[in-house]
Amino acid sequence: MNTICSSLADIETRLAVPVSLMQDIITTFQVEMSNGLSGKPSSLKMLPSFMGIPTGREQGTIVAVDFGGTNVRVLLIELTGNGQTHIIDKRVFPLKDNEGRYNYTTASVSGMQLFEFIAGKIAEIIPAADKIYPLGHTFSFPCRQYGVNSAELISWTKELKTMGTEGKNVEVLLQSALERKGLDQVYPQAIINDTTGTLLTYSYTDKATDIGAICGTGHNSCYLEPNHPLTNRPMIVNMESGNFNQVPQTDYDVYLDINSEKPGAQRLEKMTAGQYLGEIVRIIVSGLLANNSMAIKADALYIPYSLRAEDISTMLADHTANLNEVANVVESCWRMSGLKIEERKALKTIAAFVTVRSARLVAATWAGVLYKIDPDLSRHHTIAVDGSLYEKMPGYAEALVQAMQDVLGVASKQVTIRLSKDGSGIGAAIAAATVYGSR
Ligand code: BGC
Image (cartoon, rainbow, N blue to C red):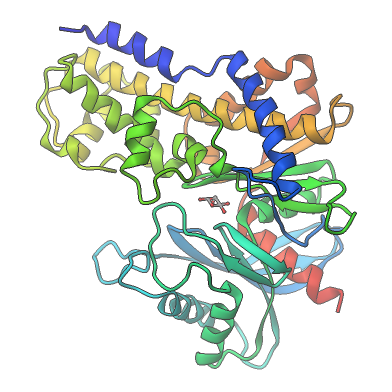
């Protein structure tokens, strides 16, 4: 029988991201960036956004729709034109009702129905029927953009399955839903990825911002390409870095990937994003039971995705002597009771390994971008991040900073990582104002 200690040491080795691996990622990431930009085969889609960074003088009252996959947020935002943003109203609606009354993420619902739901929520937030509202739309999935207001969904990610949406122009779906609801005073102006929104929002005030990222349910980063081949001008590029596939997978990752909605796709995202962290922990713990390192019985442990990122957060935040919160989580998620203290500690340690691995892999990709746009790191760079992992997961933000220091050494002083709070929604408003204001 394996002891829990020897098993933990083995898991730690498998999940470690040493500096040597980060350096390999930096190199391969840059190659994939160049290939993607020049249209060669690459796991990085490098999608043009047709947006540069804002001046900070954009202004107006704008409706923003932020569609991420778990919730849809509808916001009314005031841009003052002096770098300030003000959220006048914000409403959040889950795409899947907890009581099971509706679910817009399954294959039994169509994109048309989904956008009708969203249009209904837009109707609720508009204060005056006789005023015109420009609308900015954040749509957090890989889209082929044909212009600032035209984007076709390439494929769903984050396990979404809504039918009749892949391959469709998402802005057309939204526009027709608005028309069906009689909302002809709402004018969609721009559609952007959430990473772009995050970058736009932070760069509204901090001009050194040149990377935007989401570390939340999903993972992705964008950056400001100084000289985009399409325009020979600066343009934000949505890398779809969650699809980066040059990171060695462990057996846990392979198992998760094979059993996911789209095997082979989004390999980095499946190792780093909130949608998957709990599932990786569950797969590891199932292995511990199988090799008798833990002597517990827990039928519910075998239910996929039975542990969520929020549960990992709760475990990592538990500093009680007996790790009572850890015990509560496994009791409620897996109906697993009577855990010994060493087992509780082991679970928390595994959750920490998985979380820190995520942060170190993400940091390595950012270092790859930084070396690509500024090989000597001679300038200051701000990386703007939004998302629940960055904002709420205990230790995540610190692990990113530590990883940057480990891999960049003293040059890490040139890099600041900042929360771009509500960046994905506010960014949609900034994007819309940029377009509306320039007409
Ligand atoms: C999507 C990206 C998005 C990221 C964060 C990924 O699954 O492919 O477009 O930026 O999630 O929401």
